[in-house]
Length: 408
Image (cartoon, rainbow, N blue to C red; front, side, top):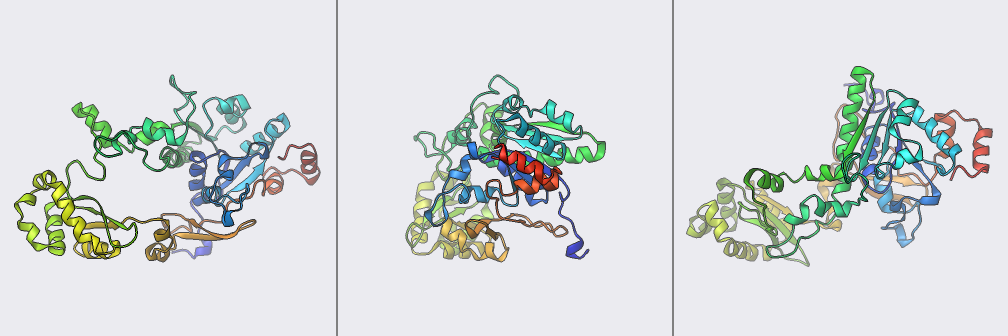
């Protein structure tokens, strides 16, 4: 194994021109930054990214550089502030494209073209460029120019039709799945395009639909319709076939545990812990019986869990290889010894809010030093550095751009 100092991060030496905002695009470029790419996020003070203005705020004091939301999804990036309403600033952006390997944007279809930074312009600036557009509906099709938001993509993609209790209306799943899902799919597509470029020398354009990316997570609902002609209903916390499969209230204030049994071996193991007599109860003899008598089974398990903490239930059932998991809240996650033992949390100094805890990288590459390199940038923090060190501008030119109000 090479000494750590001699090992390179997987994407080290590659540069990403990041024209993204909100969540989907920044989540894509976050993955590339995690892997070692130099990500230069192009921003403007005249239209600050929505996420810079979202809570949570450290010490409950808002500000464009203080958003925990923004600082989570922009770790390891640089910020270049440009007033893109001015053609001279757009020329600076084009200089950045010339010196970048990847361009990422997640505006509505056609926005980058109207801005003067569309695919045809960008690939003329650098023929081997990889460019990805993460729009809500894709760059083609009759709804390409529709307005898109992550929360709306949850019902649009079919998730809400399966979320909720029987006889209830469709429910939201809790987060905007379309955004991070689109970002992850986008990062994988960029890596594939970079691999293609390495083999052939060719750049290419990637057209990603966040809608389609979210639908890719829901095969059971879609396949039920396409293969069997039946749209599945809502089952609450239950599974259509397996039982027990639910969350059960435990001892403590609003403490819960999830239990999922998927075969007969796991059922017998659960009985050995909860009550050996259950294994001989005719109501629960087989999977179909347990499903038919699910209410009675849930009541028995609920009573057993009610006098135990979720951690006690989890430990007892996991010891016999039954899937039981504490339903964690943010406080539980923050203090979880397993996450801390894996060094999942990142605590790096930020110029304005100091050292704060953020979620880190959920994987380890044993031969590559994949680590979060820095906290998220303040707005325009790296403007002079990028202009000088990346674009080669001298100080007089930088001062002139600033005097003309182009470095906004």
